[in-house]
Amino acid sequence: MIKAEVPIVLYGDSDSNSRIGNKLASVIYATAILEKIKEGRIYGFKIPELGIEFEEFSVKKEKGKSLYVNKHNMSPQLVADLVKFGKYSSVHIQTNGLYYPNFSNQLPHWQAHFKSLKLNKSLIINDDEILLNIRANEIIGRLKHEDYAPLPIEFYEWVVKSTGLKPVFVGQFEPSVYLDMLKVKFPNSKMHNLKPLEAFECLLNAKNKVLSTSTFSWYAAWLGRKDSNIIMPLSGYANPLQRADINLIPSMDDRYHFVWMHPLKRSVFRGLKAHLKYIHEKSKPYQKYQKIEQHSS
Image 1: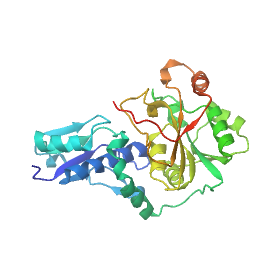
Image 2: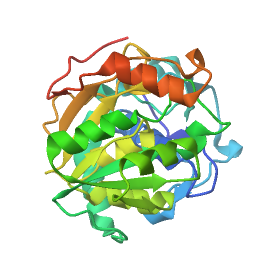
Image 3: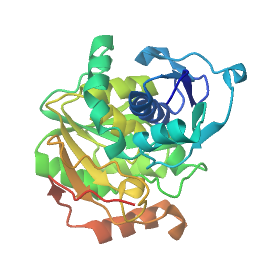
Image 4: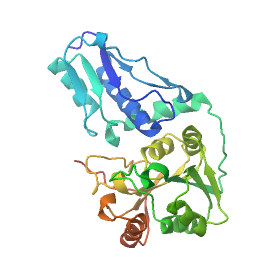
């Protein structure tokens, strides 16, 4: 029996513009755990612009054994059971919890939360337009990650042609070969270089959107409008053949259309152009799927 308050501790820096997607993922995972533990309380960081403010955790509150959660797919019920039967006095979340079945029931709560904030609409995407979220900065430069890469330019050409909507590129842009490639193929399209929170609000409010390979992009779209049309490329970490420990495929959510992308680690090819060319050749012809079979680890 859980008798005392169980601290659920999040890890993250104090910069509200830093790693918003990862922070939001861990917060939503923590609320799913809190729902099971009930006698718990979340501690951690603050993103005041998004109405998220948790008290900083003090080691003085540590009164016994700590449970360290470091697997994406560890279920909230299992965490609660371990606390109950393993007599852990606190839970330290060292993962983003990127396993959709574990937190899918949190959507109504968090949609209501963001609706209540009445965020500033710094950029309006009209319903005859489609927002193409571009993640280009850190995953193109020296801070490359094995499971994160920009998407082939041909994919965006297919999206625009198949939907008939006007493209609007939104993200954090820095001068790069990839940005040059986009401008060549879409010379007359709108391209907005926004701050992270501005981009988040834009993704949240747009009706039609295409996700990048990014947890930031995924959570902003998932928490957005109920009448959204979301195109989700199953690329990088989002592809179950590349990361079987992650599941961010809301296959029963009618807002989503999934596009299969060939799994490929960034380290296979030395250059970005070679990587993009290979992905395109192996993934075409691009097709949208309404439902994708849920995978398990």
